[in-house]
Image (tube, rainbow, N blue to C red; front, side, top):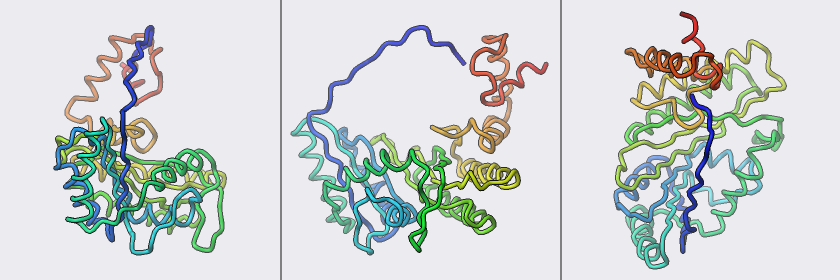
Length: 289
């Protein structure tokens, strides 16, 4: 809701040391508990804790050449990312490994996987060749994500319902939608119960879609957004809350009780000619009065 006229670039010094430690577990439940316990360590060097759920691991196994294959017993993965001085990271690394390996029987997956994970994001998600199935066939699918801010305690419920929603649409529209799994991460070591950016990745064969299928996709997105609100979360996080399917839920339900009306009043006051991001967030409604 603004026009940028000046930008100040605040450059941070690159950390002296970093440690991306990936640990394999045998279930999402194990990863969910491990992530919480890692956050509970309260390490100031902990830049992020991230969970790859079993659906994501399965997708990477069948689709991503950059992903380093793991033993079949590895069903889920937790990343603990440490930044700081050499001394800080060394001390924190000991606590992380004690928690993940000794207390949770996590399998340390080595340093190479961090490069493979980054390569998979950089080299794969921006192109359309995705969705390799069990037979090894590849279809042209684009990557879509639905994400929300969800508290740690609600992650199992949200994960279960989101996969159920995508599975239902995938079955109804064979070859049009695919479930590429979920990941969820948090950056704050002082509030381990707090918000996790929680994302489900959906493959969509856009070139084969009909108007009916597009409306089904929008409806699927709305159902996913509804689950986020049921969990006490926010769909207006990162990518979400501004697109068809998301935005209606975000504005009408998440911002209920007058919040959206207040936003429209502010929009009309600050931008009487609607030149600041027109068409976004349903705020064009501010000019209907």
